[in-house]
Length: 296
Image 1 (cartoon, rainbow, N blue to C red):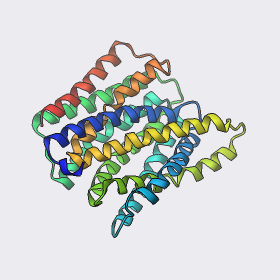
Image 2 (spheres, rainbow, N blue to C red):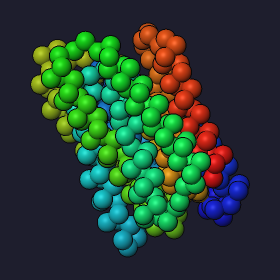
Image 3 (cartoon, rainbow, N blue to C red):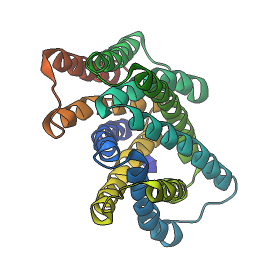
Image 4 (cartoon, rainbow, N blue to C red):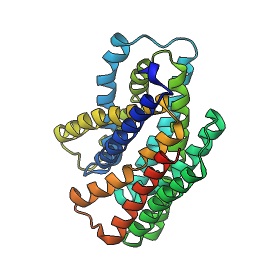
């Protein structure tokens, strides 16, 4: 896989990985925001991530060496910040309100960071694609906001956390892309990334669970966590491998088509209304991603 990095074949595989990651991430977000408390849901996912990743990290891939340990320590801090902002946002507002704000505010910062740190440069046509995609996502968020009925103060807090979440998405996308490129074996980075970054939320979730007046049954929660962990490997692992094989900015933009898939999940699974305006905005987001991909 490393041998095709930077080649047309690598670019095609990176595109496939980024789009697969987008679908998986929309499902992942829905699982965290589902009927369980978002803190406890994420804690359950991370328990399974640690359990499933530990044997791979310890026995199937080479151990990290040198500075890679410090790079992995950095991922733990950044991803904890991401998980905290997402849980706080999901705690305050609906999935279809929070998710587009997070995903719409991240691509522009990521593309600028990729230009600064990886010397990637988008063409004028690709910038039009970024504008279509991010604009469509944020307009979708505004459309969802217009129908939100929760307390305005609560909504404002949710939006602040969602914007902070979008910033952490841009930070972790750029940092993880740099980190996986520092590892001789990218699967070493991935295995240890999933294991180490899964150690924090279960502790927080345990305190949250014990404080609940009515505690949810553990079996459905554990099942949700198991599937969430598998999806997390596909989502986060897929986009990181995409940034290893090809341009960071393009992979980040393509992944944000997850908003389209999130809207479809909200429509078909969660029973939320879509309507012609949302369908138009979803088409605009998808068009922006196509322009970015074809305009390079």
